[in-house]
Length: 95
Length: 95
DNA sequence: AAACTTTGGTTTATATTATAAACTAGTTTA
DNA sequence: TAAACTAGTTTATAATATAAACCAAAGTTT
Image (cartoon, rainbow over all chains, first blue to last red):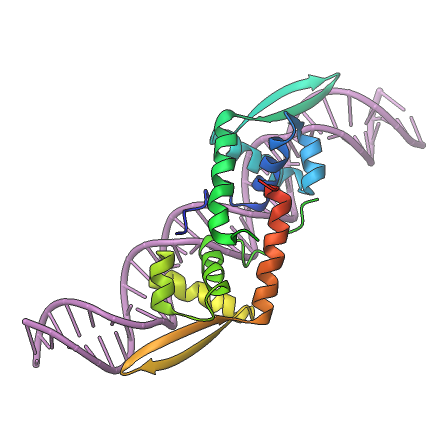
């Protein structure tokens, strides 16, 4: 009946990040920070977790002289997100 | 864009309980325990939280000689659940 | 050019949460 | 009557989320 909800995705901030990345090819740290209304510290930690899980790929480079952290979904991440959404539907129905 | 997710509902076990109660008028502790596959301790704690928040009403009585704990949604709980589901949709889209 | 501020983060400490283990109170069964 | 079972509650611990503190480099001000 109730399938387990991937704990990595069942977190407001990580879910928001994944949601953005699902429809965005790639996104920069500062963009994600603004869109999710999170603090840099929190975002940094959560991106690390998503990255360690293999759900996103993080690329660090420079834009001119400024560091930029760019994130994008992996195939695994997309699958995990879709799986999570399906599991959730058991809980929230078709509303 | 991303509305906050009610932290009381953003928990696998509490969400499962609420989901069951949304379509069930009322349910007993043992029933919820079985359906949600939870331990009694965990369920007890989570029901308390939902009850303290005013999302469910807990009634304790006896069935013959055995204690029974019966739960049902409150109007507040129904509203909170619906609100949560709507907020979630911002995250998971129309998939 | 020294002293501040800003940008783009990371690390670390703390508060909150989830969960299981241990316990209680009473009942049934062998 | 002792062991096991039912229906939970309480408490301890592990995991999580989050913010606060920190860092390095670049830009700005005086």
